[in-house]
Image 1 (tube, rainbow, N blue to C red):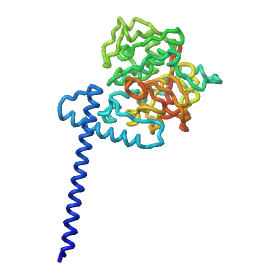
Image 2 (image 1 turned 120 degrees about the vertical axis):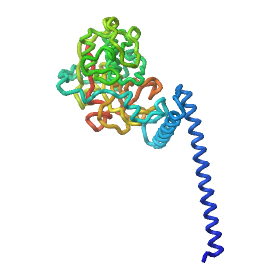
Image 3 (image 1 turned 45 degrees about the vertical axis):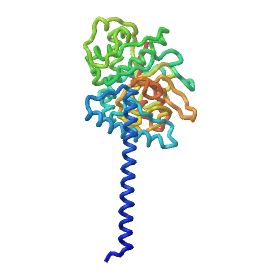
Image 4 (image 1 turned 180 degrees about the vertical axis):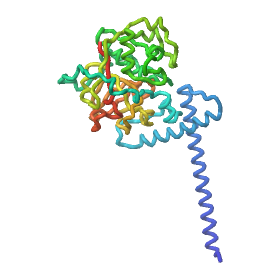
Amino acid sequence: MVTNNQMHYFSFTFVLCLGLWAFQATSRNLQDDSMHERHEQWMGQYGKVYKNAKEREKRFGIFKENVNYIEVSNSVGNKSYKLGINEFADLTNHEFVASRNKFNAYLDGSSTKTTTFKYHNVSAVPSTVDWRLEGAVTPVKDQGQCGCCWAFSAVASTEGIHKLSTGNLVSLSEQELVDCDTSGEDQGCEGGLMDDAFKFIIQNNGLNTEAEYPYQGVDGTCNTNEEGNHVATISGYEDVPANDELALQKAVANQPISVAIDASGSDFQFYSSGVFTGSCGTELDHGVAVVGYGVSEDEIEYWLVKNSWGIKWGEEGYIRMQRGVDALEGLCGIAMQASYPTA
């Protein structure tokens, strides 16, 4: 038999649970309202427009998950880097990687590797290097949704050696590589290799400028007239000895270097600032350029890496990646397949 006291207890518990449920529901609604408002502001900031309400709601859900991930990550107090809500915040990590990271590492057989390394006997290197300060680095570019990071990486190091050998910094054409370098493994927006890009530049007797052969961000037909205009030439290329950060440092001390990295993680997608020390693998999928190195204020050695995702990503288009890690291949495999053009 239920007593009056028990009835009062059950009633009180029911009212308490109902109130708690209502509070939680209200809290969730307020959070969703706040997140919707943030999504609206973000859409305005980056000029995002969706084709219909269904797509908008789908992208909002992804945006919400990504924002929560970023905020949780940034709440960890001892990390040397921060994440940010950038223009890629409404993309899943799979979508992001699939559209941009297409360095075709699986095509790069050891039989194609060069055996010479002209910086082998370099005995001393500066403690810090920044080729931007020497005028050997063009402004950060944006590859968009074309998976031709390999072309941007190869062009960046070619621009660097052209400046160092001639005294002139010229922005060169990635689109020429996308359109015209298709006889080998390089396949435009579907991926390629920096070494094969160097081979094309050598065989073609050079590259045209960005101004004369501008970037379109899609696979196109080779403009043979513009392809025949050679503004910058290289005489050859060399591979940095694999899995050797000291060898990579010797090379970077002398010129900007093309490297491949594993940039597949969400932390890379949303990197905002600081020295990146995040977890990543060695399944190389993205081509970038190392244009310097140094030591941060909190004494972390880093590589200064120029990316091709626009100036709103990272530190105005750059990322500082931890240098001198225990793994021989370097953080994210940065020392596995580095190469550079010679002039």
